Structure formats: structure tokens, C-alpha cells
Image (cartoon, rainbow, N blue to C red; front, side):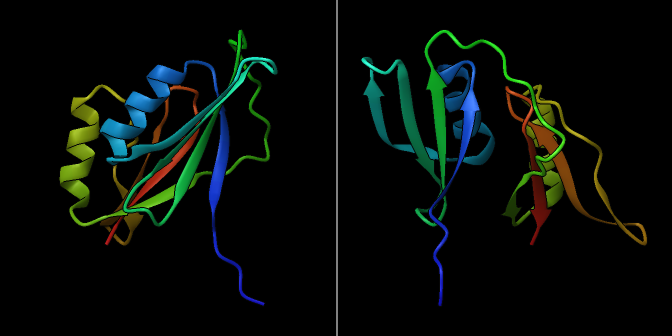
Amino acid sequence: MKYKSLHTCIRVTNLEKSIEFYEKALGMEVTSKKDFPEDEFTLVYMTSDHDYEIELTYNYGKTDYTHGDFYGHMAFEVEDLEKSHEYHKSLGYEVDELGGLEGVATFYFMKDPDGFNIEIIGK
């Protein structure tokens, strides 16, 4: 069987701040927003080039989540790794130094507003 990746869901504490982060940091755009006031949550779907979606789930009034020790990271590829690294640093995001093997920079990590790790990998 073959499976197609649809989306990754993350819970966020500030929906507007998270949308702004994913728009600015990764060039993603909102493709749909579904509000469920009776159940006190909102879902926002964002995509980049319509090949991968992130589902931001905002539960009304929830201001804190505990990250478990099971979470890894999301990964995105970029053409110019160093330019991307400088751009993310200039926006004031929490960005690690460039990493790689044998002195060749091939990736870095940054955090979204809720502390989720995002790996940026050079093409």
C-alpha cells in the first residue's frame, strides 16, 4: 500500500502569533480555518506549495501545554541554507547555529512560538 502525507497537527497557545510565525518563517499560507465555538476550539490549516499541511489547533483559553519527551521535529528544505539562517535570526526567532558533518553546514533548528522544533535542511 502507498500512503500520502496529509498534515501534522500541533496545539498552539496563541493562534495569531503561530499563524504569523509560519507565514513569515516558512512562507506558508492559511488554506482553511474552521471554528467550533460550541466545542471551544479552532482549526487552521496552513500549507507551503500545497504539498504539506500543518494543522494548528487552538483550544479556547488554553495557555500552556507540556511538551513530552516523545516529540521530535518537523523538517523543511530550503535552497539557500545560510540566507535562510540569517533571515530567521533577523526576525528574532530562537535559532540554533548551523550544523552538519565534517565542517559542512547542512541544517539548523529553530523553535516556533510554542517551542516546537523545526529543522531547516539545505538542498
